[in-house]
Image (cartoon, rainbow over all chains, first blue to last red; front, side, top):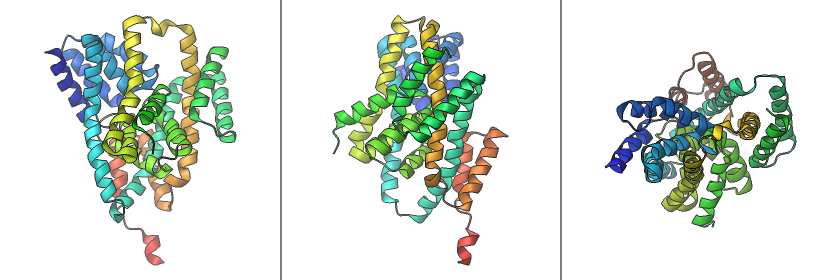
Length: 172
Length: 179
């Protein structure tokens, strides 16, 4: 029963991949070795495509791997099984946070984590920049976009659409 | 109160405009969930990312679940999560089934080149915006700098850095004791 097996494998990935979408990559490579669902070469292509399509990259990869394994049903089962553990865990944490909102230690810990998360966010931007800001053209566009964002605070979606147009117009 | 369908639709929209990992989604959550709809505060959004970093699963899903739960309990959690994963399901199935040469399209490549640059700019801009809410004391600056050194120089994993920062929250604050 391929769906049950898919459910079990992707539920485990959702449960044990802590720290975001790209953390699931090694788990997916394990799957490619364990089963004949997809080859590691196919997986490498799937990861590349997942990073340049709309949607969080972790979800894209799960959908892709599920589809390769068992078509549309496989895509649905793999994706839903992968997000199920986070939904359950977040539900309990959100309940606990609600109860302990005023707790001084909970607040101390959260306040101490926030600066670290800001560093993590910047680091994520840095990792994208390493492969994207490769010449003067891309550096100048980044600089102009950043200034525009600081001066005209409008929705992030607006800038994403504009930058796609700029990308095509300037052949980035 | 926002309806479950509306919640689903809005997270669907945010999912479509997320290119990359969960961090690429942060600027979108900030402009939609914090600024436009005022569902949560900047501090809450940062909290969700902090917790999402050390709990299982994809960070974008964790953040969506937290926000959904805050607005509508368990059903809100389910609608927001389903909303954020639906675009991936539709688009990836479409690509896998019909557009096997998707990556060869030069126009799409250029568009994504542009989008990647704006994602970097959005991340920098979001960090600048959240700076005041995220770093409120000398202790905050020190944690930020140490986390930065551990990331850039030693490439330590995110979860280790978050746990280290959490523990440092218990170090007594000498300054405030003097007051």
